[in-house]
Length: 357
Image (spheres, one colour):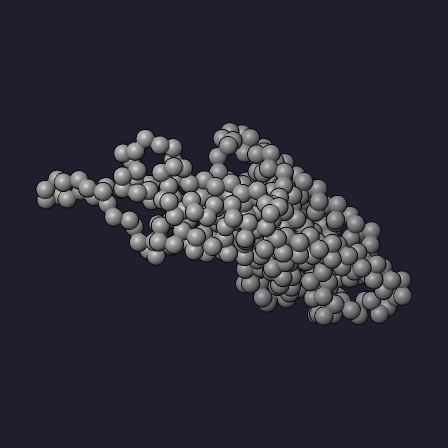
C-alpha cells in the first residue's frame, strides 16, 4: 500500500470530499435502517434479522477514520470523528428506545435471549473484537478482498449492542444496559487499536517518519486508545471472573444436591448464582411419595423423610459459604399410572433419578 493510496483512503473515511453531504445523508439513512432492523430482530429473538442489521450498519467507517487520523497524527480530526461516532451511538440508542415504546412492547415479560446474550460481555469479546477489527481494516485497505467485507461487518457487531441498550433502558434494566454499552465500547476500542496496526503495517508508517511532530501526536493518540482498552479490559476481566465463578458454583451445587437427594428423584430445573449480589436461586421438581396426595399436610411435611434429615441450608452452605442468601423454588409432583386395558389407576413408580439428571 503506497502513501498516496493511504491518503486517498483517508479522505474517504474522514467524511471529506465534494460528495460529503451526500455521504452524510447516506450514513444517517443506513444507520437508522440498521437500528430499526437490529431492534426488531432483538425483540423477535431472530439472529438472522440481527445479522442483516450488522451488514447494513455504517458505523465502521468513522471508527476506521479515527484510526487513520491517529496514524497520520491528525489529533483534531480524530477527536471530530470520535464525536461523530458517539453522537451516532447515542442517536441509535434513542431510536431503539423509541421503537420499543411505539410498539408498546409489554413490560414484565422475559427478555429475548438475543437481548440477554449482549448483557454479559467478557474478555473473550475483546479478543473477538480485535480479530474482527483487524479483518475490517485489512479489507478496507485491500480492495481486492472486498468479498470478505460482509464477514468482517458481522464480526464487528456495532449496532446490536446499541439497540440492546435502548431496549433495556425502556425496560428500566439499567445494569443490563450498562453491560451492553460496555460491549459496544469494547468493539469500538478494539477496532481502533487493530486498525492502527493494520494501517502502519500496510504502509502508513512512512508518514510517521516524515515529522517528529506527527510521531508525537501519533504516540499520544495511540496511548489514549491503549489506556481506553486497558480500562475496558479491567471491566471485562472482573465480569469474566464472576461468570466463571458462578458457573463453577452452579455446577458444584447441582452435583451436591444430587448427592444429598440420593435415590429420591429430584429434577433440577435451574440454578442461578449471582456472585456479586451473593444470592442464589434453585428451581427443582420433587417427586412426592405416592400417598402424599391423600394426606392433609403442608407441602414441606409431605417431602420424603430422607430430604429432611440434612437441611438444605447445610448443603448449600457447603458450596456457597455463609454469606449467601439462597431462594429455593420447588414444585411437588404426583404421578398416577393408568392401565389402558383395564382402566385401573394406581400410583406411578418413581422416575429414575439418573434419567432425570
